[in-house]
Image (cartoon, rainbow over all chains, first blue to last red):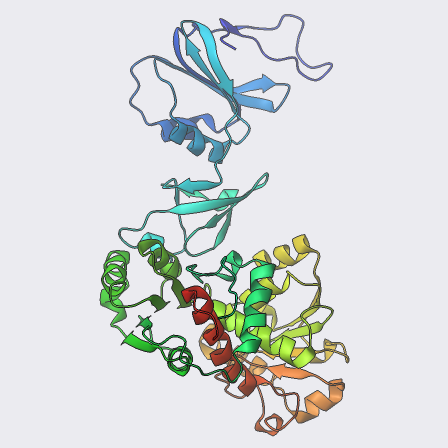
Length: 167
Length: 310
């Protein structure tokens, strides 16, 4: 949803005051909104996206969320995320939601899905894995998504989410 | 010519994880037919045997299998690991050698090397060991031996003894056994327990197992004792090694104490894990495993090359 203002989502009963504050955020004409990021992950997601932005980037940290308790949100002007970036972000935050905005309208809204195989996104932590020598690509098969578990296509070592290191 | 399973012809044998229960049983059934079978069905076929690290027995076993079926072998038995361990030269080596042979056999110190080799050529690739990862024909010959001795692959009590942490052979066999319904006894020193990843796999598959440090915790009606070598280099403290070294040594007296009619297996080479006085014990199957290695490899070569028995 392309909100003109960000209103905190209704909290648990009894929470919040009578006069709920609103945060003024400029509406996007074109760009991407990444919502429902677990609190504390927005900066990591930004680092995945790199630092070259043409337009304004608005970041909300530690906002109230009915779904997550606390969440982060990122609005990026004049930039649509690529499928490769979506896959990377899915590794950090599998339940985030993406809205692609065109001409103030939500053109597409989706939650990231991890492909069955992930190529060239994860570094294999096994120093004896052939993928860490020159030439070989890195490739991981997704065994489970929740909790995330991936297996190196080459050395067959399996990794938990917290063991994953992005390239 | 017998009917071959088309699903295996032209395929690679890189990891037991690629082999379904159905394919596994098909390979073992085919291997039965290759006992003492020596007709030259692979005449004109060449096995390219690339041993980037030495493994005399695996190399000899594959060479024997190929030659007994009339085929021939070329390649190298050792390579200076320092100059060939890089992925780049491995891919180039495979792309050169594929022109010289019909099927490629690779042993390499780096994990995933056989997978990379298989991606680099359309010819079938057999993994003869990639670091600590996989050695699928070892697992197949172990399963073949179990079925030969016990007549089945399920409803067995199977004990694994010794180094369960680092043994590639044990990991692959335990994981492949999850295709079947068995009860496992995992006996090892605390520091050499089966890694958590494999225990989780057993839990997920509903395999019944128990872990213990004491050899005599094994049920008296156990069917298989699969023993492994405990390597001294796994112990930073030599005193610790001395303590466990003999705790898992199996001899005739130990076998009599657990009683029953047990099959004793070991991937070899052994140091002192199995006493010599067990060599003429009827349940000892470790030299059968070496023999079965050739039989199973004959079947694998025939199936992957798509050349059936006459």
